Length: 109
Image 1: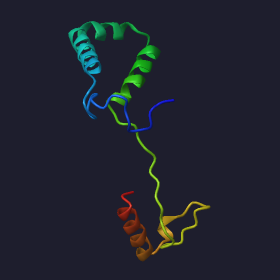
Image 2: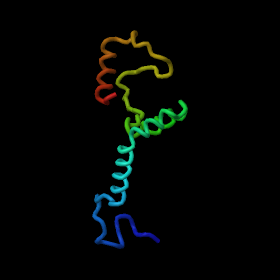
Image 3: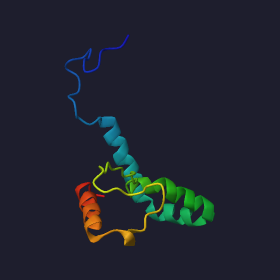
Image 4: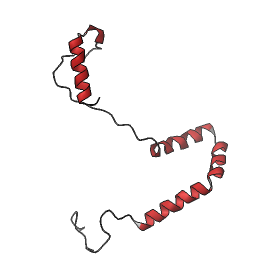
């Protein structure tokens, strides 16, 4: 059976937060390999079919653009809005619109 969480059989082991040397070395090697062969990689990329290029771009995007998260909010009954049907905002009063804007600003929506 394993050790309980937070306990180790080697109390003098690597301190928490210290990067793994093998991982760091491997990351540096991969970065150098890519940087040193950038022109070749770009040339090979251009030789791929359009579909394959799109697949590669799709797989690389998460490393460049953060994945978007869904936004959820909890709006109290400060304004009663019929959520079952589409609401025409032009039918709301200025006061009702102001309350909705305040709620959205408070929740950063």
